[in-house]
Length: 115
Ligand SMILES: Cc1cc2nc3c(=O)[nH]c(=O)nc-3n(C[C@H](O)[C@H](O)[C@H](O)COP(=O)(O)OP(=O)(O)OC[C@H]3O[C@@H](n4cnc5c(N)ncnc54)[C@H](O)[C@@H]3O)c2cc1C
Image 1: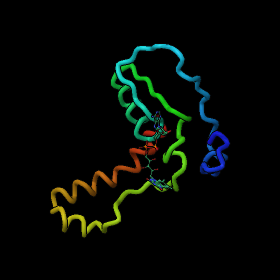
Image 2: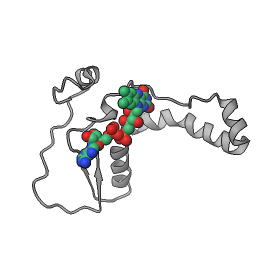
Image 3: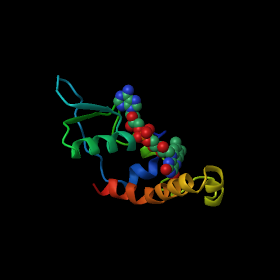
Image 4: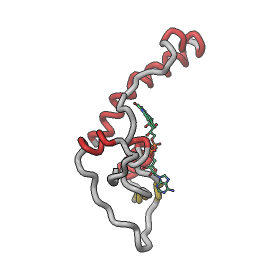
């Protein structure tokens, strides 16, 4: 990112150009200010905007500059624990619930990317 040799060169080389945004140089009003343009901040800003809030997202470097733009790219549906171990530890109600939420995670990530 930003031609920084410490960044993850593959994603930067293969992703579409990130939108070029100007530095914030004036006072603006918003319902919510979200700080950080990684997965967490962008998902938060998207959900708030979809709920009708006026949102400003402030990113100190560029979108995806942090872990979101440098990671391995695996969209995991589970934990390091095996599913049976999880239900044994948490009980069937909470274990099954967590397994279902984890299983739905990858589709949620892909849906977020589409939106
Ligand atoms: C090497 C590595 C490999 C990984 N591999 C995987 C993987 O394969 N699968 C997986 O699911 N997870 C993986 N992860 C974890 C995943 O990348 C992180 O959980 C995820 O990026 C966290 O997202 P985030 O939005 O919370 O933070 P980040 O993506 O780090 O975003 C934070 C953003 O906030 C900005 N920021 C920080 N401070 C300020 C400030 N004061 N003002 C304005 N902006 C600010 C930063 O510039 C950055 O853009 C990996 C992480 C690493 C480091």
